[in-house]
Length: 215
Image (cartoon, rainbow, N blue to C red):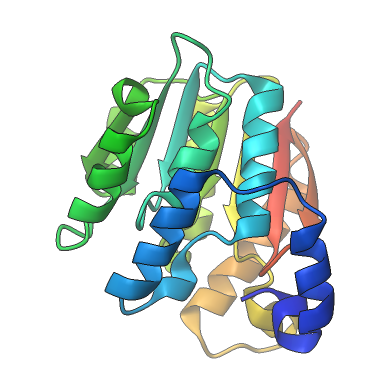
């Protein structure tokens, strides 16, 4: 849930009505996510989807990685800017829900460019030798710092990396957090801010997106 959605729903509606329209396939996917999943709030929101779409279309990446597929909403946003010979690898471990993203990937015009893997992301990153132009991470928060360490060698100058939920509903302001996920997100944000190989900005969009570019 976004800050404005919770604190000022009128502003949230204003932001949505003044953003570019949502493609029909994403409308259908968002609707089915709310109908058939127990945690539909995990879907990338409409505004965040527009951000991912614009970033992808600006970069026209050849190689994209997504960690945390869920129902595939963000995946389809990220595919919209793929180079003609580009591909996206999207990783998840939820076998029970896999039928839903697969359904929409097959319906989309980018079906041949999507490689959906049911695989642990840490395993994948340790095994792959691929270099990624664009990376989006929205999965288990307790592994965020480790994902950053593993992803860095798989990027090059100009690569863009986005971490979702880095404000963690404001919990990152806690001085001595008890929750492990809060501790790790604080660690991640500190690691990124101190890493001279990246320039970054935390966008206060929905639950916060840490936007990184490799120098």
